[in-house]
Length: 330
Image (cartoon, rainbow, N blue to C red):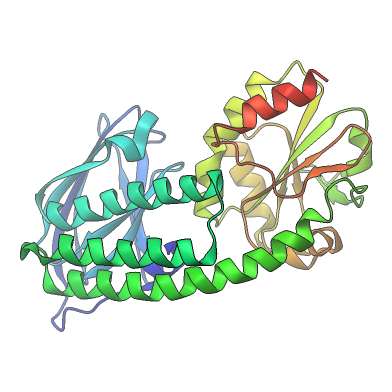
């Protein structure tokens, strides 16, 4: 959904006109926010936690990013609206006021609904029939919600098209995931392959150098918005377990040309743990052996080098801390 939405841009058929966009963020993550898609990029600077700008834009879906949290916003010429949120509970508090708020409230509600659905599926993996029924009901509910006549007609068309496309994609991915899950589960309990990647200073680090500790591995990239969303949660996790026998290792799969960008990012964001760079990105032997084709990906390794979970919970998951505590108490 995220990749498709961020790529879609619906032309208004007219020359681009101005949008007035403002944001009021409590407990903000940074002094700048970015509104962008593949063809547009606008950075706004904070004035005491408030952001405001007027700019030309074509009608469509854009991504909002504040350095840690991201959301989708719908922009249209002559919109004049404000985004309001508390960064400590960003998506729970996300709201909009002004001209254009109706469509953007829908997107915010959609995000929360989608996340709740995903959480439910993580608790209990549905059968194919259960998933199909859930997706059909979701599409039906969306059609009813969008039929009140208060939404921009292009926004309605975009949303209905997106939901229909996404339903087909989810079923396809579900079938593929079942096959991959079976393959990945076979890795659990086996000795993890060793790696040798460089840290920010160019020193080569091996996975085997962490023997005697659990190792929680984060495979990520600076360009990956969901990866960046996990960073604050990962920092909290590192702080909580700093005096325990567990190492936190982050492996970037950024392209080689972006190595300097990766170094700068890890320094500016003060990322903890051990930061490593997979010099061949997704083509690195270790990445390919563990069948990592999407990020973020988290892997848990035991003190004796065995794979505990080749697809571990994310730092933001409520299940992760209790699981780590239980393992460390054994």
